[in-house]
Image 1 (cartoon, rainbow, N blue to C red):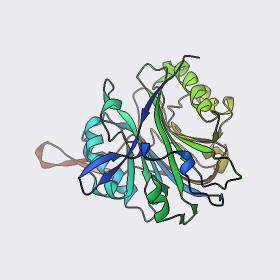
Image 2 (spheres, rainbow, N blue to C red; image 1 turned 45 degrees about the horizontal axis):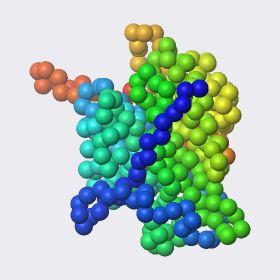
Image 3 (cartoon, helix red, strand yellow; image 1 turned 180 degrees about the vertical axis):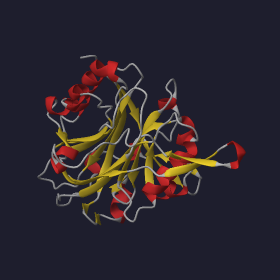
Image 4 (tube, helix red, strand yellow; image 1 turned 90 degrees about the vertical axis):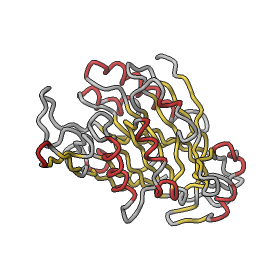
Length: 321
């Protein structure tokens, strides 16, 4: 297995006083976690490949992000894939994101250099404590006690396209008699196209091992797995991970296709379950597919056409740690 390379990143919070994004990840250590009874906590996750290559990427990404943030119950965690540099700027300028979330890769554009796009993760300020003051503000929230945020990193993967795994650790509240254990949330976009299956095989083995590192009690991997072949769909079992969709709906259950739905492709590929959530040591409670909305595309002569906001659907998962 090719060695991966770790690149430390941060989560950043928007400071209204300075009107700037400021890193928060270095302000605490796991030993600072408030000592309290360890409880089970429910979290909600939305993951979405927002499609970098179709036209009007910023407009489309705004509509997708708007549909996520305007939900009655905002997700606690948002994973986005195929974020271009311009779309990154649009996300960082979004007033609702600034108010409610901590965001990866706000500190600089390092992750977007030399690649057409990257993935980004958003973490709810309401559900996760990012320093001691935010822990004290709301020690207990609906669904359990407030988790602390741990290290953030990008793990460079063996890849034809420069892909990496974006990892955020979360640290549950603990008592003095219970050792602090982290859980890992990994945002992925594995290599694309059929001929890169050997890369995806190696990538999944590395990513699964990240959930088994010393001090890590498991977690989840979510995003675009580019699972286009039976061999791809077998990778989770081979690496000892649970497929959240199959755990809830079974192999004969609801169709979980997230890509190519209702579209005729020249390459003959039909609808596929390219986007997934894989779990270790956490439990899936509910899961649904979020179909992309449509945007208007003006045509010559004053007419309009309509196109989906993304060629991928999103996934929403409620899970328990």
